[in-house]
Length: 324
Ligand SMILES: [Zn+2]
Image 1 (cartoon, rainbow, N blue to C red):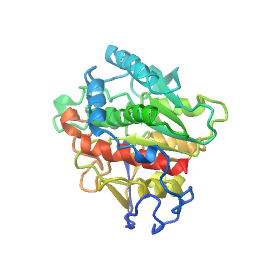
Image 2: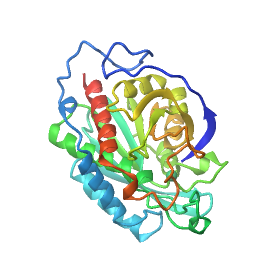
Image 3: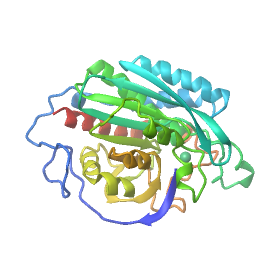
Image 4: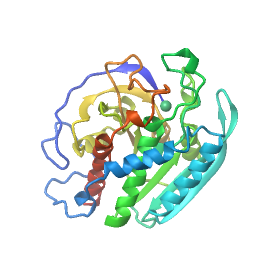
């Protein structure tokens, strides 16, 4: 993903999930009188287990499209989702990359409660960038990014979430879409990013697919993460941004307007599905992201279980809210 030069500060007060003291309006269901009687709301997200799932992805090496590590990780992701989801689909196709020509993709889709009419879409990209072109050392610019944070962290949270929902149960329909070839884009070419998501948006896994909304996770593992409200999410899906931030667990979520990012959620929103990006945005860096972004230092050392716990717990809180 890449940052665009839009930055707006609109401070707002943080409120608890379901709390009526929210300072901004919420379009989605947010009934403060209902008790958290559903199972998902009682589950404690296991960030250590999620960290282990990120480690397992990194053990394949950088998951660069077209490489053996990418192919092996696709098999592992499919097997892992099959253990937790009712149905798993692998969507294959070919996309046109900006620098590397045509590229085969695998979008790996895990479906929970396929017959439930009320559905939540959850996305993360599982590929990693072939070039560490933001590395301070130019000698590393053609080396691949390990993507512990940029790739593995979001996928790990979703895999662990599916695992815990399998045990706890949920009445909500959930579609976990692990998208491919997000990170082969180039600057000043918005449509060169999110190629797997663009393919999925043109060929949804179910005809007439219409979830309540979607949540994208991207770079959700840093100990210094700041999850501010991403600009395009607010523009396209502001009520759902309110819902997610009202459900946020932990102090990495900051209910203030953050920067604008070209990421997978843009293409989901353009397809008519409101989609919120939970992404680590930094107001104190030149890139707008964490220092490890698109460098050879985006390794397991760059992520930690406490942040993964906050993000996973936030998703469980959102699911509990939708179950009410
Ligand atoms: Zn990236």
